Length: 256
Ligand SMILES: [Zn+2]
Ligand SMILES: [Zn+2]
Figure (tube, rainbow, N blue to C red):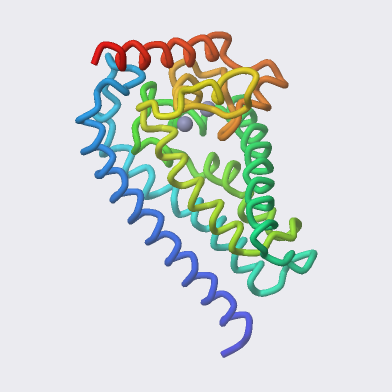
């Protein structure tokens, strides 16, 4: 078999495998989360809105957009595994692994912030509106994207492995983290509101991206509030609402 055909077959197999794993775990986690969250209405961020009525539409849209998301990831991994990188990957040790993982997450957050802001301007806006049809997002909303959205945000995993010398294991772990973090971050149920998810700390709670869906032009980043604070796009009520949620939880604990 010619080497180019073998290379392409390798890419297609990896793409297919990634798609099966990502879409399969999206469905399994989505159902498990929906079952669990029905028993915890007290955690719902927008209690008067029911995003679940868009479930079937969002699952169908995710099945389409994951072709691109998984293609970006499988493409980057295959290029890396077959040596199309600028540098040799750095060694993976007990201390370098967490450092590289954290750096990869920060780099992705930076990429995501600027790609996402681009999705909100001029001619690009029309492709991003589909994602914003969920004003109250649910666990099914994470991949409710058009192909343009998916490519602009997820091509991090296609290009960055070629120029940043982190080993494949780091990008795989990062993508697994991003998969579940993205689903929980869209779930509409709060788990992470606390002092570390508001000023002066850079971490974000679930409410952070939930407010992006509810108010549109704020909170563009993914994992951290850092870039939104730097560029003044953080929702002016965000810190106060996180604090109010903490006090609510405190009062519930005292009452029980
Ligand atoms: Zn948006
Ligand atoms: Zn979203």
